Amino acid sequence: MRVSALATGLRCLRCGTLHAFDPEARLCSTCAGAEEVTDPAVLDVTYDYTAAATRIEEARAVHGVFRFAPLLPADAPSGPQLHAGGTPLTAAPRLAWRLGLSELWIKDETRNPTRCLKDRATSVAIAMARTAGATALCCASAGNAAISLAGFCANAGLDCHVYVPRGVAPQRLEWLRAFGAHVTVADGDYDVAYDQAERDAAANGWYSRNCAINPFLVEGKKTAALEIAEAIGAPDLVVSPVGDGCTLGALGKGFREARTMGWTSSLPRLVGVQGDRIRPLVDRWEGLAPRTMPDDDAPPRAASMAVRRPRNALRLLEELRHSEGAMLAVSDVDIIAAQRRLAAEAGVVAEHTSAATLAGLERLAERESLARKVAVLVITGGRVDQ
Ligand SMILES: *Cc1c(COP(=O)(O)O)cnc(C)c1O
Ligand SMILES: [Zn+2]
Image (cartoon, rainbow, N blue to C red):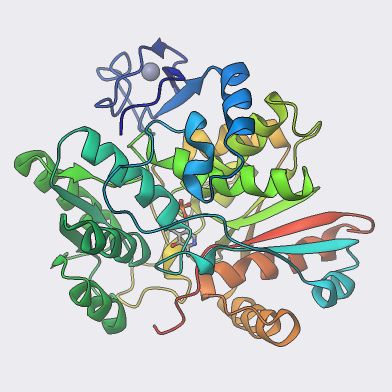
């Protein structure tokens, strides 16, 4: 196991500075002193794409996230590791027909080890933590990232510290405890949990799996896009839920890399979906004034995308611009109906956050014709026991 040989640098998504590749880097050092910083100056890994394309071609037999190791910041760890990625892309012809699409595909991320796309980022986190010699990892999460990290740490025999918001579903806590994680329930929402996790990680020397400011973890998430591009080329539309913005931003990067390597000739339009109560990135993309978000104790049903202060906004906005993308807000009522339709007409068990993708696509179909279009719903997670 070692740090990637083909990573060439780290580009700041705020000021554009290209830094040397450094596996310990977090935010941009050039931006560090900047005043009025609203968005964290997150870094983006750059690669030698010509060499990477050849190596990926040579590694056809490898399966899962590390099939794309030449485009990841670390190689597969030599120790134990749950197997993430390589998830099915399932056709959903009945839903396609309903929406007037030519094809609708489900990227079924519920088939990852802990039932969630987060496992792709966790795979890379474990590889990076091992390279750094860390034996303890931590993260803050509404549930899925924490459960993912806890599962992978259980398998690898690493210490795991997780921070969850107040009001997190008891079933999620049970999973965390079953995986043997040290659990801290924050005295507040996800944002409070996040700050507490970062503080404790710094104080204790834990490896932080918080995806937004760690430049390396989104690299794991982008492999979902590389898999889609390998399977069907570039679809017209890719729909994903948006919380911090890492997932959809990473998918956008993956599709641009697929185009750079000559696998595809176009880019899909990225469609991000948020709930209609907590929708900071919808408002920002639409140029609307930020609205007051309800500060209630009960998290919305689609808890995994209820992020009030998104930390990877710069990445997401850049990818939305590249793809001429869209951001949509959907209601809880529409999400629940979409979850039922995904089950009834595609046989897919999606959690509320992920079912929001179908609700979003239905909303888009009201605004414009989807005739002759190929769309992919990224069903990010399947934890319905909340
Ligand atoms: C975390 C999560 C998201 C949102 O991802 P971000 O990277 O925070 O934008 C979407 N769906 C599920 C199931 C998640 O767990
Ligand atoms: Zn910078």
